[in-house]
Image 1 (tube, rainbow, N blue to C red):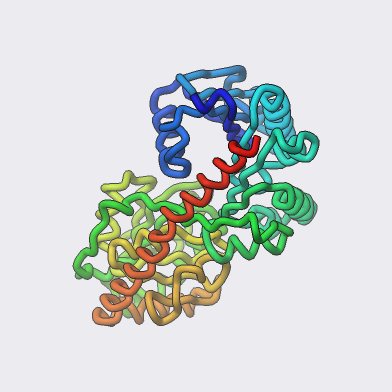
Image 2 (cartoon, helix red, strand yellow; image 1 turned 135 degrees about the horizontal axis):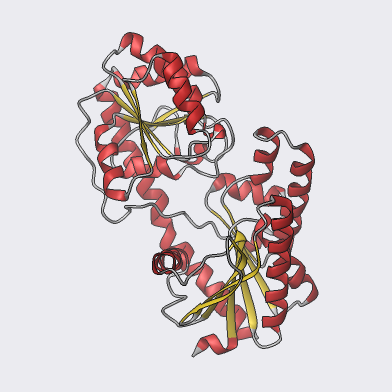
Length: 390
């Protein structure tokens, strides 16, 4: 078994999964099959490291082990430090017996591993995924300048220590390079979507429905979209806004809907499964991603493309990796409800334009995903090279 000479350590931040629960174990397996499809097939030993939400200790299921070094306190600064310490100790202990290949889902999650790699070079390797800009959220959403500065330094340190940096597109590649990542160690790995293998282009929706899919947090800009819909409804009274997702900002958004008089026009669906979500895409004429903070990419834009739907998004961050202005959708200034309303109206009132842009977005989405298999093989070969050189 190859797992005897190598251990994969996943730096969960801050919470690790309780794999004693069958549904959680199934979710973990699906994530591995998605991101590292050869990992479980080749029977490597995998350790999920972090804190337990309401437990601590070890959970084991065949070759997957979940280790919670401490029970989470609920106070984010303390939990972050305890998670980093758990990652470091797990990497140190495992490196005495085998090569440790660590995977961090974000740069800030990899601090403990990066320190272990610095101290135990050759015995600890670090793979870092880059899917967004966490530091900017600390500044622009929470207004915490001190936290922004700390996260900026942590991210830069981790990316400089990484043996392999895996961004999801051009914007996240630039983020990594700007923080000091080695260009020779970067592999751009397109992020998968929920129905890449089963989606099909649907006929253009007859009703003037607008769709938002995502977390209901302030940075997603749904409050701007609601303001825009107020204007849209004055010219297209039959328009509707379909909102799929949930989050801490939902109550504020529901109150805004009441205040704007949109209770019959803005509909909240909560989190939906893939089949139910596809039904909403079929009903929609256009998908809108009105973020006011940089997205790593905006995978819902790709999902919309696979369903043949045009897209509108804020002109910032990784959204520009997918939306080619005037081709498969439109870019609008972030936070500009008036410009967003006019752009939505342009698509709702021109069926030919919506159809043409939807087909173009399908091609953009497929082109993005086509690069995934090649990138996965690059990641696998890099890791195999580490194993062979040990």
